[in-house]
Image 1 (cartoon, rainbow, N blue to C red):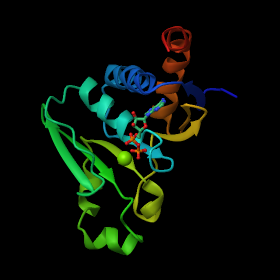
Image 2 (image 1 turned 90 degrees about the vertical axis):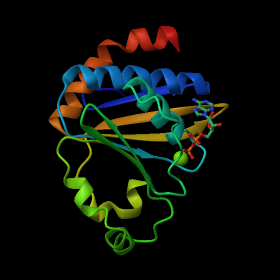
Image 3 (image 1 turned 180 degrees about the vertical axis):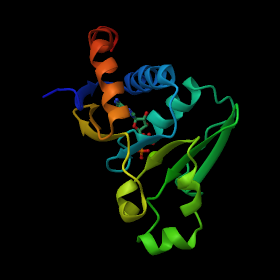
Image 4 (image 1 turned 45 degrees about the vertical axis):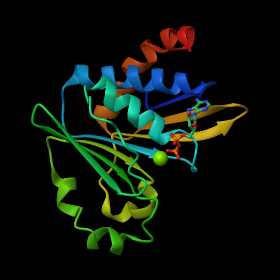
Length: 170
Ligand SMILES: Nc1ncnc2c1ncn2[C@@H]1O[C@H](COP(=O)(O)OP(=O)(O)O)[C@@H](O)[C@H]1O
Ligand SMILES: [Mg+2]
């Protein structure tokens, strides 16, 4: 079911995940409000990094975009905005998160956060604007987008109007 704070989509192929990330990134950029927090949930291999990579390309990152699955954090900067791409899969608990010294980064109010495996340290993290859950379905993926802030709900309303568009093109 879709309403103003959630949208479900079926993305049959990898390039549909790219396209979805592209539409969402453009929607978010048009609002120009920071910080931006997007949390990406789902088992290994469901498309979280694929989404993040396309999102980062759309917002203008031209560097090679590496998966943070080993480094935990890959950081970028564009026009004085910091972009943090985390993958907390390797963390065992939030004590480890604190030990890594990432806590202060989360206070950056001018930043964009893309966080894979937020559930590994959920006690340490602020509420996301949106949470996207990825799931394998047949050869493709189902994504469930849940908005959790006013800002996130605003993006979802715009995404709803683009949905016809999304479905035609997917
Ligand atoms: N909508 C989709 N349909 C089919 N395959 C997809 C889709 N989205 C992503 N993939 C594929 O899933 C694989 C794993 O993706 P990845 O982004 O590394 O997953 P994760 O970060 O969740 O572990 C990649 O080969 C990617 O091309
Ligand atoms: Mg990944």
